[in-house]
Amino acid sequence: MAKKSKSKKSKQVKEAPEAEKSSTQRESDSPSEAPKIPKEVEKKLKQIKIKLDKFSKKIRDKFEKYIMGVALLPPPKPSTQKSDSSQEGEKIDKDKINVLVLVDDSEPTKMSKQELKEKLATIIDTIAKETDEKISPETILLSELWQNCYDGKKELLQLIALSAPIYDEGMLGTIKLAEIHKQMVLKKFEKYIVSYVLAGSVVQGKPNPNDIDVYLVIDDTDVKKMTRAELKDKLRAIIIGMGIEAGEITGVKGKLHVQVYILTDFWDSLKEANPIILTFLRDGVPFHDRGIFMAWKQLLKMGKIKPSPESIDMFMGSGEQMIKRVREKIKEIGMEDIYYAILTPSQAAIMLYGMPPPTPRETPQVLRDLFVKKEKLLENKFVDMLQSTFDIRKKIEYGEKKELTGKELDELLSNADKFLKRIKRLFTQIEKMKEEESMVGIYDSVVSVIRDVLRLEGIERFSDENVETMFKDALVDLGRVPDKFLRILGDIVKAKKDYETGKLTKHEVDKVRKESMQFIKHMVEYLQRKRGRELEKTKIRVKHGEKIGEVILLGDIAYIIHDIDAEEKSLSKAAIKPDGSLGTPRETTLQELEKALAKTDIPPRVFIKQPIFDDLKKIFGKDVEVLITY
Image 1 (cartoon, rainbow, N blue to C red):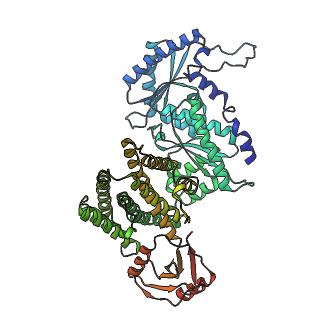
Image 2: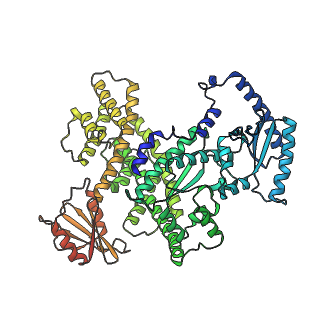
């Protein structure tokens, strides 16, 4: 199976059915292909198009809400069979213009569908004769087209695949794209395709070229050389690629959304009465079916496919799980995303001023002392916004606040937006205030932040002379920092040299100042993220009974939280001995842990030795599960 797929992959386009190729050639309007059409044929086609445009406009003016598409059909193939008298089959009128008119009958009317078709067909035939005697329309109801698919009749689909649209609201293009894609898939994988089904809004008469849903069910019951998951992934990748090729072949600018199910998983979903699968069964239209899809569809219609009590409980429970996940996401947004969104620009502003970045806990006070009290550049209310966000984040992190409401999140987002706009203006104020400062100050700030980042990466030796090389080797080449920041650093280094030789221009100063702000801001954010990840590596999660505890290893002290979900947390700390074991735990507080974390700029590497696991059993009990974060 795998070898067969690989050997034919490069031939997919070449092996497309001849009908697809001829359709493409007929529809192509590429300038390079135009000369291949004889002049007399080109002239005839233009005349036919003029007539069909006129015919299409007339029937649309008459039946605006019914006409979904009008398409020129290929001439019927001449019969190669001969009668008993050895005479050739019936001659074909080569001048006859066969046209398909697709009618939307999805809206209920007082007439039956057959009466509606006969009435519309009669009037459309009359309009065709008035336009040109050679025009021969075939009126097809949308429900009739779908019924043909239910009955396993593929002739109409094949005709539409070969047709050239004159007017299309999207339905003809959608059917054409799906039919060509189906033919390509079946040509390569027919043995494995149980069903190819069109679904979504299009089957209800509401085509959307950017949202064409097709479902494939693949027979995996005799797969031996790979796992079922591998089969699904391999076929799905190839089939999606075929969807792109089908779009290129047909010239239809639609987007196929391909859903691939393996038969065993699909059967499990049926037994569970999965709502998505039931909707697919109820509304889907099979373009190809080996007798299974329609059987399932009929069983559903007869009420034979019913959910089990277990599946009902499962789907009920899934709603609660989703709500819980939403609440956790809201907490995560409030605790992390908004927190870092306002923390890093604040620290970047402090660094732009010329000071080293403070710890997150100290940032609001430094911001207040520096820009509110000393320089009087910032209003006190914006520091209050920053402090409020920090406080909420801290309460969530330590379990003092269990939930973050939508109203609270909106307020946090609103304050963050106001804060960032004000900080952006603060950057301009600092830049203006620092206009007279030397280039050396900018350079020193940049080098300082690079030194901090490199220390966090484990590089202690640092030389100003080869700062670009170290930055490139340790950060850019390893993909940790984008290339553009190496270029910015190069500009800053060059500007410093120009400053020292008296060649620095005002334009260069302005450029370097702006670039340095961007550089420092990005590096501070990198520093904070990295520091957060390093702190995570110092934590050991311990499950004991129904509770989850946490051990934070900071240097030679271990801080132990006995239940991280408890409203009032019980904390203790113990010394970490040279052999890796823990000393006698003694009670401590959250405040003491916070101070220890604040003092830990770059957490030291943690080496966990066997004795600590024995001590964890003494602290939490013998029946424990340990999770180490990497």
